[in-house]
Amino acid sequence: MPSTDPDHVLLDRAIELGRRGMGRVSPNPLVGAVVVRDGTVLGEGWHEEFGGPHAEVNAIRAAGDADLRGATIYVSLEPCCHEGRQPPCTEAILAAGISRVVVASDDPTEKASGRGLGILRDEGVEVVVANGDLAARARLENQAFRKHARTGRPWVLFKAAMSLDGKVATRSGDSKWISGEESRTLAHHWRAAVDAVVVGVGTALADDPQLTARVPGVHRQPRRVVFDSTARLPGDSQLVIMAREIPLTVVTSRAAPRAAVEHLEMAGVEVVVATGENEPARVASALDQLGALDTPVTALLLEGGPHLAGAFLDAGEIDEARLFLAPVLVGGRSARDPLEGEGVERIADAMRAISLTCEPSGEDVLLTARLREW
Image (tube, rainbow, N blue to C red):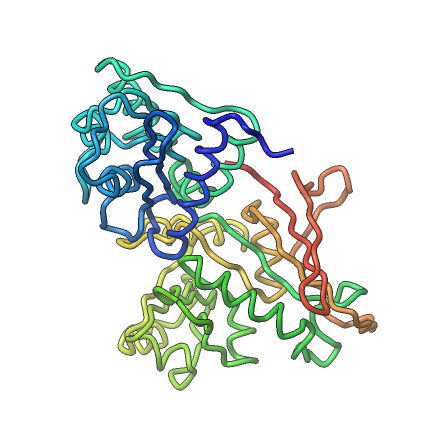
C-alpha cells in the first residue's frame, strides 16, 4: 500500500521531479522540490540544467505571488549553502519566509554535508530529514553524484548482452545482434543519461562504433572513452573523425608511441596516460583522471569488451551491472564471456549484489544488479 503520510507523499513527488533533470545536470545532482502551505501545493520545480537555477529556487518561483510565510518545502537533497554558479538555496528559502524544510537525503560533498541544514536550524527553520525506504530511494537516484563526491571517481554502470549460456560473442567474435531491438534502444537511453561511454580498443577496432545516444530528446552526447594502451585507434575511425564534434578521450599507457599519441591529439582527441603496475591499477588511475576533468565524468557506461570489463571488475570499480539475457544458445569453448580478467579464486570472494531485479525487455530479459551503494 502506498503511504498516505503527507510528508512521505510530497517527498516522493520531489524525488520524481528530480529525475526530470537526468542527462542534463551532471556533474550536479538530481534534485526536485515542492512548496506546500496548508495542504495546498503552491509550486514545484527541479534542477533543469547544469548552471541553471536549482530546484528550490524553481519551486519558489513557480509559486508566483503566493505568500510563503509558514510554508513547507520538500526537497529530495539537502539545500546547498555555498556560492557556486547559483546563489545558496538556503538564502532563497529564508528570504521566502518558508518555516519548515523536509529533506529526503544528505549531500555528501565537503562543502555541504549538513551545513545548509545547520544554517536553516540556526535561523529558526524546522528541519526534518527522512529515513527508511524514502531516504534510500533518494540516495539511489544520485549514486553518481555521491560516489564522485566521496572518491573523485565516476560511478560505473556495466552493460552487456549475452546468450542463455552466458556468451557475449561466438568463437569467431560475432556479436551482432545478441540482444533485441528494444534492448538496444534502452541501452541508447542509458548512454544519454551518463557522462561517458567506455569501450576497449578491441571493440573500437572490430566494430568502428560511434558510441553516441541515438534516441529522441538527447540533451547532449556522452564523452566517448577508449582504453587503448598503445594508441592504436586509427585516424579514420568514426570515433576520431567525430572527436572535434563530440569529445573523445583515449586512455593510453606509458608504452604508447609518442608519434601515435600526437597524431590523436592533432585530430582533437584528449589523451590520458594511465599509470600503475597492472591493468586494474591503470583502470583506477584513468577513473581518477576522468573524474578530475574540467567537465568531470561522474557516471560512465562500460560497454566492454570482456577484457576491459574484467579489468574494471578486478579493480573493484563496477557499481551496477545491467545484463540483457537473450533467448539464444551459443556454445563453444572459445566463445567470449562477458567478464575476463583475473577474477577471484573462491566464490566467497566474489562481488555479491546488494539487490537484483529481473524484468522483460522485448524478447530479452534484463537483469539489474546493484553492487555498491554510495
